[in-house]
Image 1 (cartoon, rainbow, N blue to C red):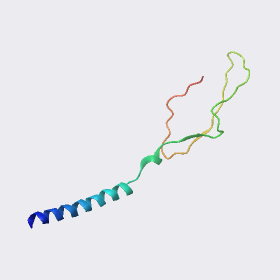
Image 2: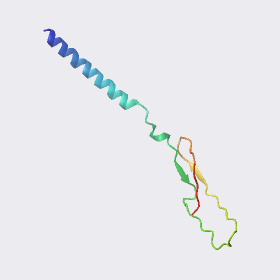
Image 3: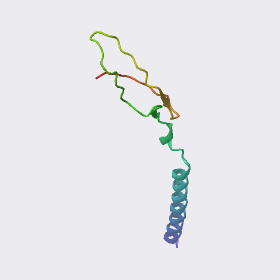
Image 4: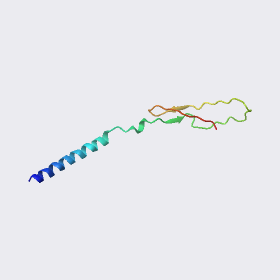
Length: 80
């Protein structure tokens, strides 16, 4: 009789713990939407300066928006 009681108690605890773990997995917030997301406003990453003279200073602005919810950090920019 004592062995049957432990078996029933174990099954009940196991069932309750499974439900608690399932609820935690379902209702914990997912940080997937917290990442930054860079979107260029004009849709292009290229710009043609046409014909230029050697030594001429060239400049162009690429407007962009951070559509994500986290801070966007730009660490390195290079020209080709």
